[in-house]
Image (cartoon, rainbow, N blue to C red; front, side):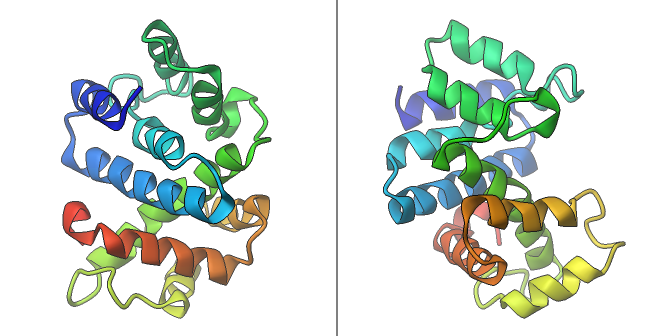
Length: 183
């Protein structure tokens, strides 16, 4: 199990550039949290990279991430990686227990939201994005309306980090890979 193998699997199942960029963003945030929380950076990065790999083919609640879990099992991915991916979606009924599971939930929707905020900035960049700007956009219910504001707040709470600090931390992680993300 390597990043290259996980990346090949992502590319096999995901053709959309935006969904691939989302996977890269979540990977970067997960790697940053692994360093902060003393997790296995490679393992956490793979979880971030693969958390939505099946979404394009199986976009329903009945399909995602259940089909991905099955595929990962067939390919020999360990239970802790599969469990973390299952736990990122509330509808699976898999409770988030480990720091890796909690971090995945905390960064998943936030990465998408931060990317959306970056796209509407004049320079279309995440570099220099301020937490107060993110919070202002959160109040605009018409902006990125598919993103649950409650989940953004709950993610920070579950990982045990104040919301503003969590947002700043993820902005920094995404800024490091902004060229790959196109922001």
